[in-house]
Length: 150
Image 1 (cartoon, helix red, strand yellow):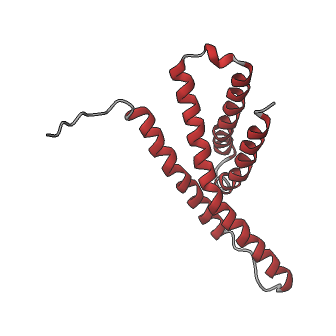
Image 2 (image 1 turned 45 degrees about the horizontal axis):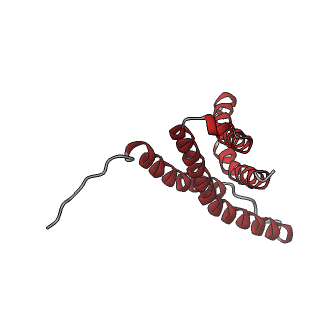
């Protein structure tokens, strides 16, 4: 029950960031779009399953390294999605302003190119921490060196 509120927040983040993914997938074929959507919604599905497994105590039987990496990847995915919220929010505010102005002035038409740009920017912006943190998890966990100084 205590996992219900965080799971709802995570799903709301997923739905909001999915707007940018959907805008970017408009030009893809139906099959390509289905693949991208399936990959995108796999993360929330895994997060829900891990949340349910953690509250029921099933994760106590999992290997500690697997559970740690899985939690870290989910954390990284949601931090990255949280970062993507800001450009999408800017686009929503811009679209609301354009919609309001178009109600009073019929000469102004909606231009979707800026929405595509902000959606691409949001996805690229969220991909940077995702890539860097994932690299840190898998490549750098034991690459420490001891430097002795006199």
